[in-house]
Amino acid sequence: MRSEDLIQRLASNLRPVRPALHPALATAAWLAVAAAVIGLAVLVSGPRHDLSERLTGGFDLPQIVTASVTGVLAAFAAFELALPERSARWALLPLPAAAAWLATMGWGCLQDLARLGPDGLHIGMSVPCLVFIAGLGVPLTVAMLWLARHAAWLRAGPVAALGGLSAAALASVGLSFIHYLDAAAMVLAWHGLSVLVVTSIAALLGPRLMRRARPVG
Amino acid sequence: MGAFLVTLGDVGKAAATADRDARDLRWSQMMAAAQAGDTRAYEVLLRECLPLLRAVCRARLRDANEAEDAVQDTLLTIHRARDSYNAARPFRPWLVAIAERRALDRVRARGRRVRREMPVDAAGEIASGEPGAEAGLDARRAAANLRQAIGDLPPAQRAALGLTKIEELTLVEASQRSGMSVGALKVATHRALHALRRRFGTEE
Image (cartoon, rainbow over all chains, first blue to last red; front, top):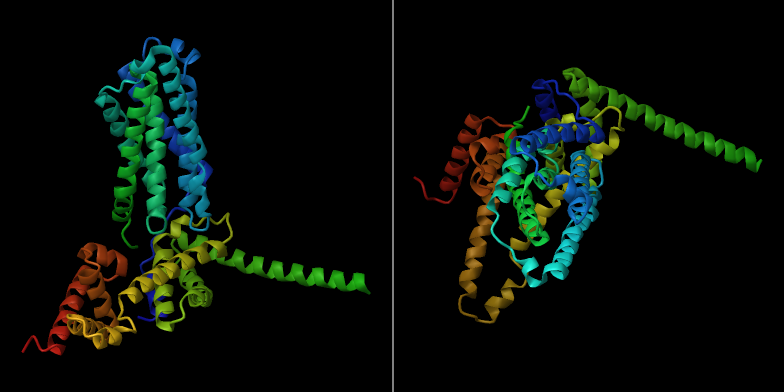
């Protein structure tokens, strides 16, 4: 087919579309949705009774702050990457915050080690952690990919991975308000694993989902 | 005099920028109209952009046919991702970024294909008398014949065969990728296979 004929064919089945939101606006919309869903989940589960005590000392507050910043920056980076002309380097935006997040948890592990000895690093099973983060993170990722659906045919993989990271990081913040884990090693292992799982699922299945939701036309 | 020339140069530069901005602004407005469903603006816009798209793709792909394929990939992507453009931003960087990406996809696919082609020193292998060298060469020759036969198919049949049998996409995916209907894909694939069988004498 000649390119001129292709143009004619594309024009003949043109349907109106709504232009994508500016990345900052899209991020704001996404944060509103995520905050509402996660906030509701926290209210339904009931915040932990010693929340205010936990937030004033220890590693909980820095952990929550760095996870939130990771979630926000990953979302902004995803919406930037979803625009074709933006630099691929936007993908690096959330990495310093993610590193700081891991560092706060690692630092918490060292403090536990100093306080409790080797027992402080014992890692038990905490499957509900994974269920909470994945259970909220996966549907939220779908919402995020819907907001970034215009990237389906361009940089779907990186956009989906960043969307998954954002959803999982924010879900992990919600979990920090309710769960019963005290040991930093447990938080590092289970939050870390859950975020990795959600991000991987998003990277693997996200692009296919985005394309399926966007047929030609 | 010097100062006058500098001023003249500045005027020239400013005029060039203003000119480019005017065109970009016009394209931007046409794209906004296309997003709202104006088919006429859309068709004119894509036709006006075609030389630019060709220039971008030809800079990456020396083969004219391959460059034109990349141009068509670009047009399809522009169509599918037309909501990723916002009229508040310049139009050309958006357009060129998409063309660059589709041209690089073709460059990469070409690199993979070239690595599978027959190496020039295959004759040396035969001369070495290594067992199996000749059989290996026969297999490569058969593959080259098949590639040639596929290359001789009409474009629609070649595209259908490539998507459904070589890339092994489902009919729905192939339809999304090519813009052909599922029915047209089925017919084209069937005809392509029929033509190949006839050519290689496996069908009466």
